[in-house]
Amino acid sequence: MFLIDTDPGIDDAHALAMAFTRLPADRLIVTTVAGNVGIDTVTENACRLVGALAPDVPVHRGASGPLLGSVVEAAHIHGDDGMGGFAWPERPLASEAGTHAVQAILDAADRYGRDLTVVALGPLTNLALAIRLDPTLPTRIGRVVSMGGSPAGWGNASMNAEFNVFADPIAAEIVYSTTPLTLITWDLTQRVRFSHDELDAFWASDSDAARLLRGIHEHRKASDPAIARIPDFGRVDPLAMAIALDESVLVEADRHPVVVGYGGLAHGVTAVDWKDTAMGRPHIAIPTRIDRARAIELFTL
Ligand SMILES: [Ca+2]
Image (cartoon, rainbow, N blue to C red; front, side):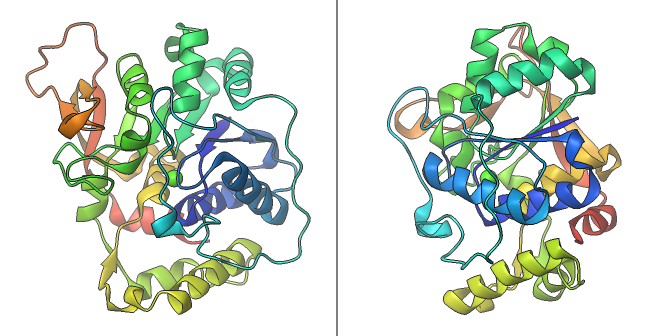
C-alpha cells in the first residue's frame, strides 16, 4: 500500500502519474499538505490529477500550514495555481475523502502496518502530526521515502535550505528524529540531470497520464521562455517516487542522523551528523548514487 503525501505542484504531478500508472487504485492513498501553494489549491490539483488518472484513489486534505511560523509558498515557481496556469481538461474532479490526512495516515498504519510505504513529496507537517498523535507510528510502518533537504547547503528556498524543509522545519525535525527514512535531497537532484529530449520522452506515449503531463509541460515551456535556455533538469519528486516504487533505483547511500535547524541562517538547514554523535536518532539513508537508466524507465508514462 502506498500513501503519497503531496503538494501538487508540477513535479508532484509527474510523481503521482508514475504511481497511478503502475499501482492499482486500491493500493493508493493520496494526502495533501500546504507547500508549493496553499492547501485549497494543492488539494484541488490532487483531486484533478486523481479525477483524470485514477478516479478511485481517495484524496485526504491535510495541514494548512507549518507547525510553527507562517506559511511559505513557492508560487513564484509553480504559479498561483501550483501548475503554472495550466488549463485542466474537462474531467470530473475527484471528491475529497471525509477524513483528515493525519487520520488517514494513522488509519493506514493500523490497517497495513509494514506493508505501508509513505512517499512524502511536500513539507512533513502531516507526518509529524501523525507521529505526535501516535509516537509508535515510525516503528509500525514500512518504508518512508521523503523529498527534502540539502546537506550540501544548495538552498532553493534560502541560501542554504531546501523548500520542503524550509517550509516546515519543526515538522522535518520531528520526522527525522524518529523515522529511519530515505531522503531524496535537493543535492542529488542537482547532480542527476535530464535533458530536454529525455524529458519529452517521459510523456511521449499515448497513455492518459502521458497526454496530461505532456500538456502540463508544453504549457509551462510556452509560458516561461527561460526554460528553453536551461540545458538540463533535476527530477525532484519523481526521483523520490522512483525509489519508492523500486528500491533497486537506490545504488549507494550515506546513512547518518540528520538534524534540522530553526530560525535565522539555520532555518530549514539539514545538518548531517557525519560522525554519528547524536545518540538515539535514526540513521537516515541519503542516496548518493542511483540507477539512472531504471529511474528513466519509471519516469516514463
Ligand atoms: Ca512537492
